Image (tube, rainbow, N blue to C red; front, top):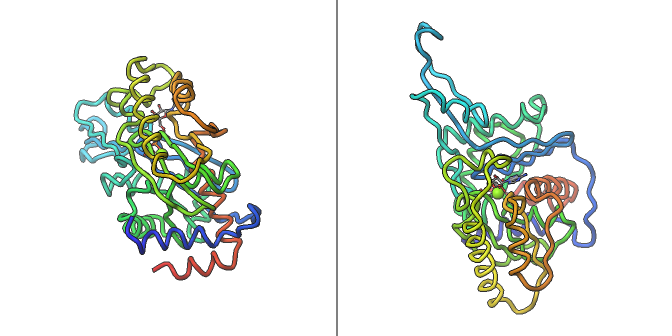
Length: 306
Ligand SMILES: Nc1ncnc2c1ncn2[C@@H]1O[C@H](COP(=O)(O)OP(=O)(O)OP(=O)(O)O)[C@@H](O)[C@H]1O
Ligand SMILES: [Mg+2]
């Protein structure tokens, strides 16, 4: 992470009062965790999740005399694969914007799904990025600002969301997503160090099979291999630290049958499994947005973000 970007992220996190996790309720915060597999979003009254898949196809003469194109996101886009000329793309790859148009269409879907279209213009949108994607922070803030036109857009390292959701401030977050497994250490909510491991749920499934996780079960061999890779990366990461930390396990990977158990058997020390692994980051980002807006220092930091 470049130093000035690390400073901005840490300055925002620093502005959260150190003595308490308390905050005032701000109805105008929208948290978006746009992952490689699924978008998870949280507002004051609702939360929602849908696949980060964008689809487009040309309509036939039977459907539309002008043969226009149709676009869809999420499971609607996935259904389009029945049409031979449909183009399906993933808007996010390894936690980063893969296709700008697809990404814009996908994040535009958030407000209607949360039923908060009317307050979007006066809201603070808080988004997460993998720790390794710090170079894209400003770019993503601009893209969100341009696309959603909220009152402001903030981007911070997403894994901190897991800690906040668990009511903690210090610890190692191991978040097994679709495209990456993030291993990140935070001290008092400040980012200290991290690694991004390329193996995550994509390693378990072929193609879009992960979208139907209720019916598609990964092979045991792949599960065991992923557990071995993640626990080994974590062990290597821990060798560089001067003391022991509690490990918080989150991400959709935790819900894949057998993976959490395999990890628990391999990881030593104190391990806590997030209570709501899929939504941990989004829920924590939402809470963090509230905390930042509740503190005077937070509001000042926001106004200084270039
Ligand atoms: N209830 C569930 N049971 C089994 N697997 C699940 C469940 N919910 C989610 N998953 C799996 O979790 C994975 C997605 O996890 P997650 O939403 O954390 O990834 P992501 O945030 O989209 O990816 P990344 O963080 O790498 O960008 C998918 O493979 C999905 O099949
Ligand atoms: Mg994720």
